Length: 226
Length: 107
Image (tube, rainbow over all chains, first blue to last red; front, side):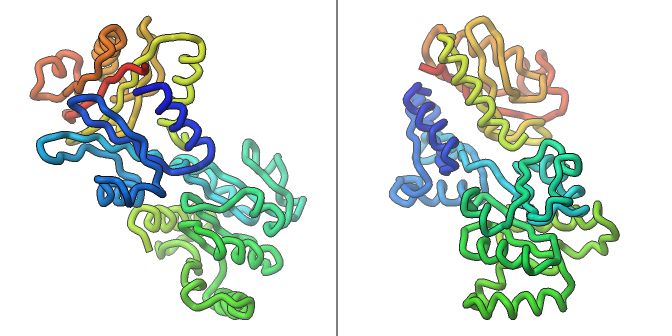
């Protein structure tokens, strides 16, 4: 690998831009393909699949082997609500490769003592989310049950490309939430992006099991889509 | 944890800035119960120091030797390890998996 290509690769990673490195194995010839240019590449279909499923691999084209390495930005999980379930979600999220951010304007919840070694913002979601930047490698979960906090977070998430949006609350809570968000102008297709009640159905009891259910759903959406 | 490959490459950049000569080894294919997924990386310097992982320890020794050669020759190569391969048997890919690793100098 040439130093210039490594520099471009590292710059892309620092800016959270998705790129791929294509290597012809017989010759060592390499090219860097930004995701936004992938459609114009001779290996467009392979690159598209690779980016979508975060899948690197060897491909054989006309007797030549090419290794396509996908460098998607690191996964991030933004948790709105410095609550008990958040504490249970964090170790699973970290173990599955997410950088975790916790937001809660309630100072009594968002403390370093409750959330050691976590990027923690004791601020309102609508103030902090534009600064963090929500992108297609980010998942956001709203856990406070408080519309004053959850609704602005969900509004920001719906206006972004986040790959997963989850919101804690019963079916009844979800219905009234959808009504409030619809009143803000969101279409049914937008609102369908919110997974609520959050998590896959495993009969979870208590925060640790709910955390498993949330991270299982996040993983399913990341890996399988929808 | 979030992205092991990025960490390895960023550390490689630090080594390059110190003027060290490096090779990069990347897992490009796996079969069976290979311990490290495709894309896992190992960076090696000319002294044989390394960071990262391509196999969880089974073939790193052999890869480091090949990497030092690659730094000297300036040429990339593809290595294959597996139970059917005599070398792999020697270095002990005990998991029973097979892997291919691309070794390239950073120039």
